[in-house]
Amino acid sequence: MKQANNTVGRLIITGGDTARTSRFVSKAEKAAERAAQSAAAAEEAVTDTMSAAADLLTRADQTSRQMEILEASARQSAAAAGNAQTAAETAQGKAEDAQAAAEAVLASIPDDYSELSKDVDDLKSAFDSTIIVTQSNNLLNPVNILVGQFYKTAVVDGRTMMILSANAAYSCAFIDIVPGDVYSLSGISYAAYNGDADGYAIGVANSISNASVADPELDTANVAARYNNTDKTITRLYFSWRHATYPDATYMANKGELLPYEPFCELTRDLASDINVSSDSVTDEIYFVDLNGTGDFTSLMAAFVALKDNEKAKTIYVLSGEYDVYQEIGGDTFVNSIPSDASTYWDYVTVVPKNTKIIGVGGGVLKYLPETVPDSAAQFISPINISDGNVYMENIKIICKNCRYGIHDQTRNDHPNGYEHIYKNVAVLKDDANGYTGKVQAYGGGMNQGANLVFENCVFQSHHYAWSLHNAGRGYGNVIMGNCAFNNLVTTRNAYPSIRFGNVSGVQTHVNVTISGCYLNDGIGVVNESSVERPNAFDITMINCVGTTGINITTQTNIYTPQIFNA
Image (cartoon, rainbow, N blue to C red; front, side, top):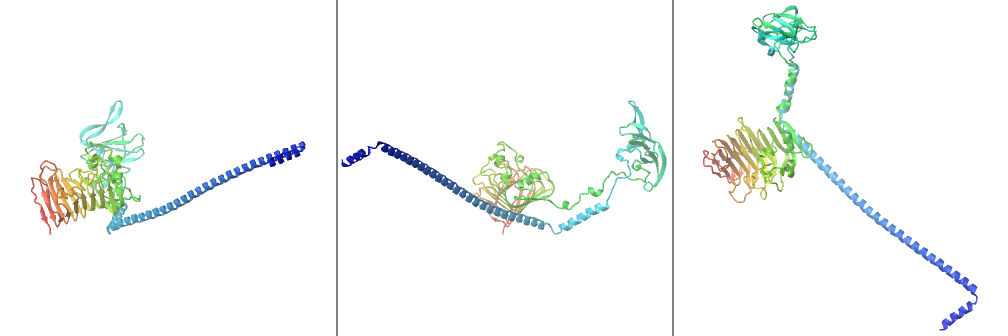
């Protein structure tokens, strides 16, 4: 209370000077206003400073992220460079492998080949330099000689034409001539007429002189009439002669002065240019298949397609690598396009061309491994399909499933002169334990007349018959197996023999079968291919084989008793 009274007292004391008090209040208010303005400016400055700081923080964060991105990019670039280096080294290695393979192929060519090639080239050179056969001077082509007729003129539709008239004592012919040149006819012509190629007669050809020349072949003087053609419309000379005096085979027409008789010959180029002799004609055509693109083809199927109409002897070298045959033929798109009611597998398979050798170099593997395919495709498609002509396969491994066979060897025609399908160091591993259960042999074949099938150092394995062959029509021939392994993977013994021979032909034929030094895990079966009884055609001899070597023949008609000679 005392404080309040003092304050009032002071106000009373100072309140007397009103003017001074007003000025004081006014200054105080202005000071307060300036203070407020300063405070606002300070607040705005703080806000700006905080905003600038926030912006700097944002930029710092962005810079940090950019640095992280750049660092990641740098790491990726370094990794890519490393991968590129690795790829380059791999490519270099494969190129060196391909070069080594090519050198191996060249080294496999017989030593005497280069000599033979040189001999052939020398022979061709000799032809080129010594055998030159040009066109004969005799212009009278025997084809144009008409016996028992001669030329005369007659008016036809207002035009004078050359016509033929029958006369047994005469022969006639014509030659094409060039205006301004002189021509000579051996013998004394009965008549000679000028004309054109359309048969119009332009007048009698008057001889300008007669001449004779010694003719050793005729042992007489060859008498001639000479004709000078100056009319540009005259392009053909028609003439007739008495063949009792000058036999047709010795009559001659030539350009220029009369010459001794020469037989007609229409060769117009060097004979050597027609003789197709070269070093290539004594060896196979050679092609290379290489996944890396260094060969003629990058896939075996592409080679078969390109060479399908080439029946010349040829060798296809398959360089190392795993070739995806399923994708090469078109993969899922292709197999799904095969109609479910399709009946002819030849319409859908790629066939090995006739007279082809297929040789793997450095470990070529053919894979056909689709996970699932329609049965319509599985019953038709095999990775390798062989038909007519000679075929040789060596050093090839086939791994397959969900297909007809690994190798389908089915000739379509009889071959009275014989044919050979030879397999050496070939392995076919077919796995259909959980897939297609139709025709699942590793090798499935059908032989026609003249077959010679040879298997050496081969392996055939399947969840069914490992190897199966039937005859067809007049199918007879030979089957030779040496040092091979035939293995079925069926757990139930005797369910499927390792080797199966099926009889299709209704007539008695003979197929000589020799199996030597082979392994069979479940023996041999000889059966009727269908429910129709057929005579057995397979005459089997086994020599020093191991495993289960029994032979079970279920055909009722059999004249061939198997022979087994094991140690």
